[in-house]
Image (cartoon, rainbow, N blue to C red):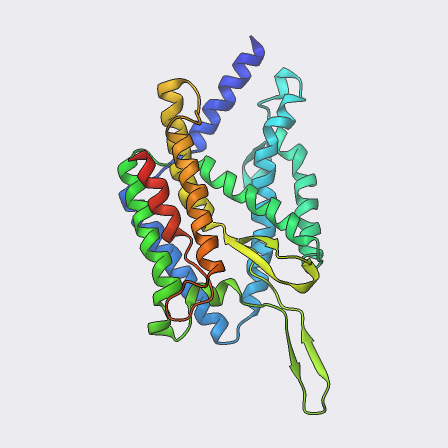
Length: 300
């Protein structure tokens, strides 16, 4: 009975922490994303590459917090029943769950290891773990109340991705999205005396990366976290629909159809990139161009 009460309390706390998106928030999401991306682009073009280090530091903190929130239920399961939902006062910072605080040092150590060793050939794997934790925490916290709001959000981000990748060169002479995504890549310069000066670079961390062949070559396939969380909101909505109709997320239900659509869209994006299908000579693909229609279609 105590275990059931603790589980119910945890579910209620999670429900209280969730944020339900509406049409106004969908528009705000678009405006904030556009403003942040354009600001980053203009700062980088002006030579303020130090902004990349700031983003790396913020990602380190955010990802450690996200990972701690995901591991907290496992930590709580190991605690006595009376401590499962216990909180600890942090003074001016408010309160935090004991279960979260117990895993926080481990998560901070993992994120800190990535921060210190982020240029190592193996660091991409740890970055992917931290990025996946950020994505999972986002889709757990933000929820779509209806398919209508989901279509509005995904439709706006569909147009955003196409403009920032394919159409922005018409206005900025470069693809804004690709310029920011690849900013700080390692480079080298040959000086007047013939010596080669290497710049290790500072990669944008808001990406999942998989090396193409030997990681030491620095050639990676990349997928932005936005290409995961935006369709992911629709997939979690589909899972909740299945849960209310069938009692579980089903491969044969809405969640299964949306997941199949996501895999198909991702495959189309990879194929388009492989065969260099592009507009305005951009070396990259707006993944939402394929993901949005192929995830919305099966659940509409």
